Image (cartoon, rainbow, N blue to C red; front, side, top):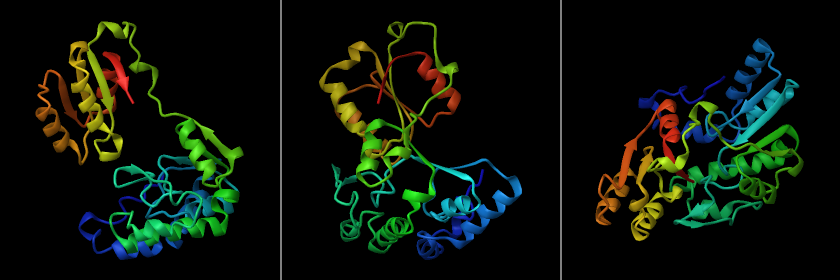
Length: 263
């Protein structure tokens, strides 16, 4: 695998922001690096996950130019939306889907910055002009049927969009019926778009603690606010529990002893 995230040392990242933005729509460096890797390893498939912003869509073209099948997993809506979430000001927003994303620049949808938002818009437009998503990528993996529909409405080729949900291996499965347990589980990043605040509020309003403990596995920028929210709703640690970041094995352990999983 090729990981572009460590190419710039943390202390240099602020200084390098302008450079990153300038090459985010097309990185010749990334093109050559992927080409060299293809020549060295001769892979049958190049599977691309997150190409923004160090890698750029140049990596898709590099693999295709080497006649190697190219697959892109769509972990978010980056190809359609500047902030990749289809949300603005805590509301669903699809103003840029399938269109020139000028509204996203006006609203500074990417990191509250007009220049950075313009860089994402340039990547989206240049990729359309080059036919990256229409002709270069052989298959796309969407994680849900809902997201697949959004990508189709945004112009991605329907015949090359496949749904493959995220999964864990069978070791997380327990032979004990879930109804035996009292742990109700949320697993994920604690950020605003995930809606965990709504989950906690609903937990309190519905007096769900009678059915068990709401265990929130994960970390993120919203954690402190969510902990404050839980206390303000008079939910004790026995009713709502925050574990912080968990390893893959710890997540599997939680799943094996949970009554239900909230998505």
